[in-house]
Image 1 (tube, rainbow, N blue to C red):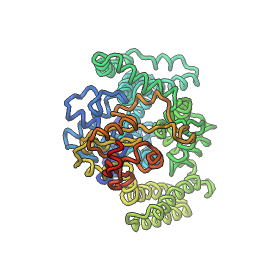
Image 2 (cartoon, helix red, strand yellow; image 1 turned 60 degrees about the vertical axis):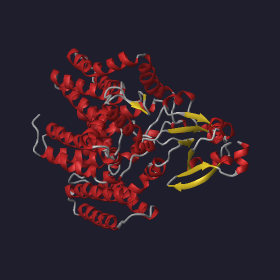
Image 3 (cartoon, rainbow, N blue to C red; image 1 turned 30 degrees about the vertical axis):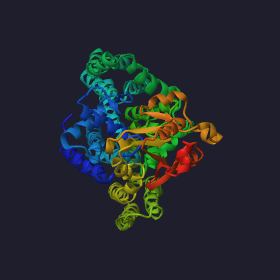
Image 4 (cartoon, rainbow, N blue to C red; image 1 turned 45 degrees about the vertical axis):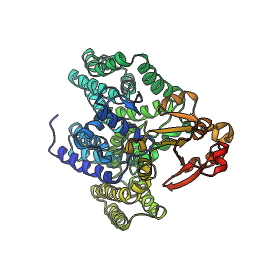
Length: 546
């Protein structure tokens, strides 16, 4: 597959787009800070093979994301934007790769440009491209697996199957067994649809399997040799089997969860995806069937899992973007009624107007550019629709979405995201010499920014309302958290011992805290962001009572 001259240019353009705003985004809790702190400890400890957090080995995710972030830290230094670089780079690489693949398979650079632009401007893709998580890395490895597996199955290319297995191994180093199991199931279903034993034999290529083992065995073998059963129980047991069988967030365990996610994640192209699904149903050519198996198979697979996360079906954006490409070009084809184009225009207006409306709710930042970009983009899109200039219509949607979302991120979302970080209280905690406690919460970002040890206080849940108790996870999930933890009574004993302490209470836990045994013994010291900070009450009566 010859590299197009446009592909490197697209990579640079999308990398710049995905890096916009990263310099003002702090590390957030509870997810991003886990990855950032683990990578930081990897660099500081010099142990680049066994992930650890709070100085304790842990097995939440395989090694790939930590390597990527740690490499950036090692080269550039510890900075928040550096931790976001892997997602930005892999996001841009995914968009450029999809262009290259679609151009090669269709023979038309315009098809590749439309498809890659749809992927890059999809709402969830844009969000994840700025995140510190594993999902963008997994998306890229999955894209390569499915692209080369298609070539291997349909065009009987053993070399392509070997490449597919290599990228599957990289995916397993990123997310675990699911990076092999899910693509494998989708490919088996695809072969079953065509009742092709030949495809099945090509799929089970021994050379590819050997290549896969060469990629994954060194790290997994090392981890088992060093950590033994603890690694098996933690990684395969808790973080894979338990996720599949016990819901970490019981309130989210509903059958329509990922349907709702899809409707929002694909904006502004949700209508184009649905139209492409319907329009392609009659033809049922191989590319359509392949992408439908991939997209719907991913949604069904994770719907059957007990634990639901918004990003579990993230990789389905690739096949849905390809289907949206079919839908967009069909909806805008000459001779179609003008109203058909509203399957694209409608969701676009919904997204843009939601951004504009949000600026009146989130009343910080300067939104002048947002209104200018939105006004010009809407006018240009409607003009292109009325004059039936379909490619200009798509151009206005893509460029308008890029401009509008960039302003929204810098002016509106950055301050909002800051509230999900403890960067504002880092200076308070960092200058404190005593022990720091969190009531019914834990901020890994505080540890990341200050290096200060934090201890979690577990509240007495027997006093909580039945509604609050329903939100609690099963006891098995308690094994996921490796920070030091104490009970309310243990904390009171610490106060009685005369130790100097600082207590941080997230505002969301304020009611529970005020009902706790601890509240009478501490006084509010300050309020920062979404947290309240308390210190030992100095009134004599309380000291004597302790």
